[in-house]
Length: 329
Ligand code: UDP
Image 1: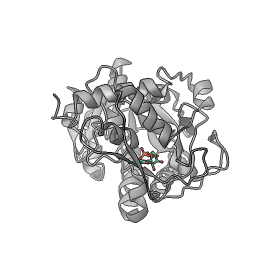
Image 2 (image 1 turned 45 degrees about the vertical axis):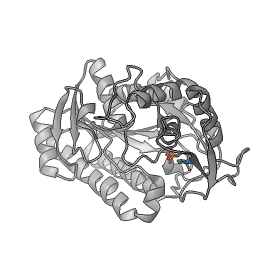
Image 3 (image 1 turned 180 degrees about the vertical axis):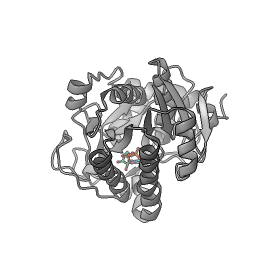
Image 4 (image 1 turned 90 degrees about the horizontal axis):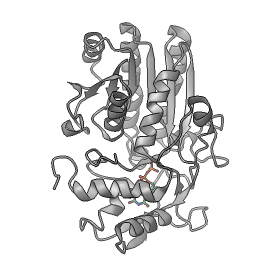
């Protein structure tokens, strides 16, 4: 299948593009390179354009006979979204609508959407199931949930078919060691912690230790980017016209910020200093997935469920690419 990947030169997009190719599909990477990296495209078909450009989208879909879209391109920082909701609703929600219209006009009837655990807000219970209450507590989660609602309306009105994948915390890097996470500036926990043994940072700040968790720090469910990529391949095959299917993707086990830092110390064999800092706005106490639906309906089976191995793959990438793409040593 010819598959257009918006944001395909980014962290998750580049891993999914490789998995798609491995599964016999033809990925076409569509990326503005504002956040993505040309080096992450690795010889795949590539269109440099913005998702806000409806004409460029239509041209890319028609010229490449696109049959399905996987929509990654988005702003993803929950904390930032609290102070800059305009950025998130424009780039995630409004541009999502531009993409849906282009698909409808070009007869592209299938889409997999990168949704997020942030749509649940502060969950009533963990592990969270897909039918649990949707109540985002930050504009990031709200901007993604709006797209899920738009997908439902476009499925009903125009017969498009969708899968929304609600990602929990995506981490790690490809075991081959040549693609990985490279955000600038970096805001995510594991890459920031690993900057300490790399000599790029003196200490890691723990954003709050007064949460309602055993050690007071936030609990998250960390999933390997390659396991997440596999789920996209299965999701593309599961799309049905006129329907929106929704799946959580996590490992079903929660780790606190302190536990993540300890695991990074073990993997890197480095004593990583940590200092408690104020809470980051928009952070719920705990997010842990039930991915039973993905396991049962998509036959999804994570290959790297253990945090230590996930961190080891991240460490291999960061150690060999301490400055991300273009900065390999
Ligand atoms: N976090 C932290 N220090 C940092 C970065 C993140 O304590 O320097 C915490 C953050 O508050 C959250 C968890 O680590 O509880 C995971 O944050 P991340 O930004 O990696 O992912 P998110 O949960 O926002 O998707």
